[in-house]
Amino acid sequence: MEGIVLGQYVPGNSFLHKLDPRTKLIMSAVLLWVIFLLEGPLEYTGFGLFIVFLYLLAGVSGSFLKILRPGLYLVLITLIINMIFTPGRVVLDLGLADITREGLIQGLTMGFRLVFLISMSSLVTLTTSPVRMTDGLELLLKPFKKIGVPASELAMMMNIALRFIPTFWEETDKIRKAQIARGADFDSWNLGRRIKYITALLVPLFVSAFRKADELSMAMEARGYTVGMERTSLHELKMNPRDYLVLTVFFISVAAFVINKYFI
Amino acid sequence: MGSLIEIQNLTFWYGEDKQEVPVIKDINLSVKKGEFIAVVGPNGSGKSTLIRHLNGFLAPCRGRVTVDGLDTAESRNLPVIRRKVGMVFQNPDTQLFASVVEEDVAFGVENLGLPRAEIRERVDSALAQVGMLEYKHYPPHRLSGGQKQKVAIAGILAVQPECIVLDEPTSMLDPRGKKEVREAVRALNAALGITVIYVTHDMNEVLRCDRLAALSGGEIVFTGRPEDFFADRECLHRIGLQAPPIKELVHSLTEEGFDLPRDLNSPEELVDALCR
Image (cartoon, rainbow over all chains, first blue to last red; front, side, top):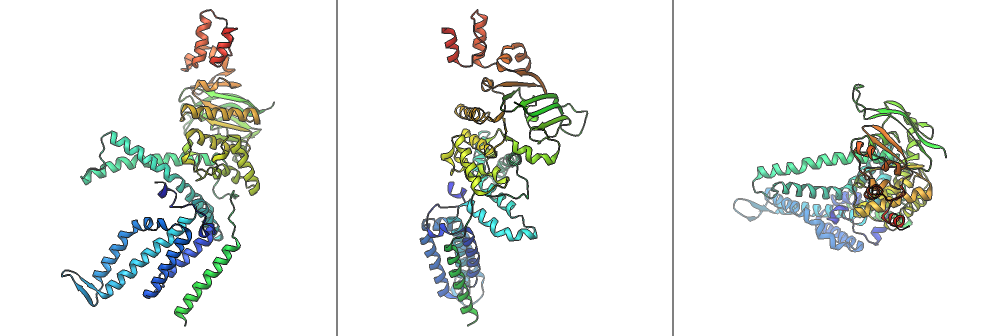
């Protein structure tokens, strides 16, 4: 549970851990875009190896499979649907459905893209603590404050949401047990009854959430918080020479890739 | 010592309707600087409503509340008042909202817009004062209830208030947590001279306060030394409170003809007095 709770963060001391969250956020955003530019088996293999390299570098390779598991069904369904429903040259005749060559390629492409997307974006959360992440997001959004993006409020909301996930897990568990003691059967095979019991779980949970939000806002107000105020911060995020170096090398490589692909 | 908080003829009722029964009726109370004052009373006696006036959460319907001369009804005074009067609430879980202890303690100071070095210094010293410095990198949900309340107190301390109001801070804690919090609060009052207003319905907690105010049905029915309060058994009975066991014991012994002083607050003191 702790793993889910802390946004999958794996504490560590690797090169990727030490990078400023802003560097990581910018790079991953660009890389997510690069994923959609990939063409052909060579480029896909190259990118796949690059991701594997990053996971090894961060020392979080153990979490790779854990992160992919929830997405695996999505990948499989994408693969199957694409294989069957794309018209083209039939490779394998299964009677009801035919697997086409185009479908196979399409399916694999989509599947790999999904795997890349999941593993790439997880890499940021795996190597950045939630606090640093929200600080980083706040600073990245700061320029947009002028056009009315409430950067610090958004960061505050994200911080509170992360903080209260474990509290709500506990609360859910407590209510669930209380309802079981009153005869609720959450494992019932009867779908109608199951929905009824889930309601008996969700309603108290929402009530308690609202009550907590009320108390929390009072505690925050008592400590002098008002929305839209200028605040200072305990921790400072500092872009190190390392970050500038990484960003420079990164952007040159991406530019080289794009220019090579489309302009030469 | 001058007075810090002045409550004059405070009357308050919830809702707009003036015909409604007031929750608080015509209360007068003045809190001196550096005082440790306990506010007691049964459930529904208006304790929480009363103290919510002290930092301007509620504005009086009639009467006046001033903190260091600043009227709580004026909204432009509120930032200053909330810096002077810190508040700790009942539920430790809904007061801590950062994902790391030190971040939470820093919250109030960050709101003051102080430079980073000063924030760091204040956070560390506030945590040290409540004895929680070694937990500063912990996530709050891994702490015990008593520890959470101490972190909440540290968060208030870091702002360097003149007064801390605690609204039943121990009612959701186990005996050990209660003791930890009580001792931390007492230390603040003694060592730093911070004014403490301590709301509780646990009579064991008020034995060592300087002064006690008892509420019943929205009115103050007693103010004075805790010994005098517990000696007035008729008054205690009327508002539905019971003296702590040690006071009951001393009372019974006195009725049996023992000559005992009234300010005995622990079994040890009682033993000493009996053996003298």
